[in-house]
Image (cartoon, rainbow, N blue to C red):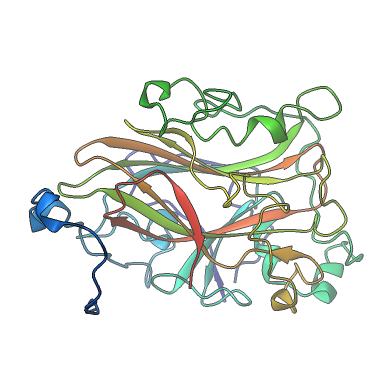
Length: 336
């Protein structure tokens, strides 16, 4: 079951072309008696209250506000401001599971797509009624054949040839702290890659006291698998964070490659049967967790876009924002 989109609780809500009037939207820690070799007398005393993040609050049962759908801006939860921008139909709220993807909190999840996000729930037979009748190529929507560039503050420029911003904090603000975007977006046949059908959710957040991390869940999928593996046709999901300790992409696989069809986590294939992505591939739910500082203001941009051409859709599902005790560099791992 699907729901429409609205932004109702945001401080700077700006929706550009998202609503499509023609679319139908329907524990206890186990004790270890073995000596681990660590002399606890040498460890500093860390007060228990050092990290005590607010509890996660869900409020999407009666709301289609994209922020509340992903677990933000709920009363008693995570205050947030935000904006959606992208071509008509490129964002959609789904209620209940979408194929194998159960909501990670509440009862809904948000989809961003380089095509029409609502089409993700359709079978190949249903897609054919919209004029896309080749399962090898569908879903495929070309919103605009005019290439664009990444909006500020996103940049493909690496901060260093070797170090990232965890290695050298002085590099923060000098480019992409992850150094993960340049190689795949800066060289397509000797020239920078064309970027098309760009859609983003842009968020403003303030870190609560005694909170050391921010996490969210996402899943990426693409029609480009398997025909365009290891090619310049490499649609991408980027999660760009602006914080005191990191400026750059925070979602990448365990080899520091950005989230594309070539990412190490792209192992859902048969699980997508019955969806528009049947015959193609995606990731399972993944979690990105990144360290933050209490009291700092964050900007987080979650974006998906076509690379090289506007055909063959790719999409990302987003849900489950929460504060954590990470206190560590960004890391993305599969949800158990």
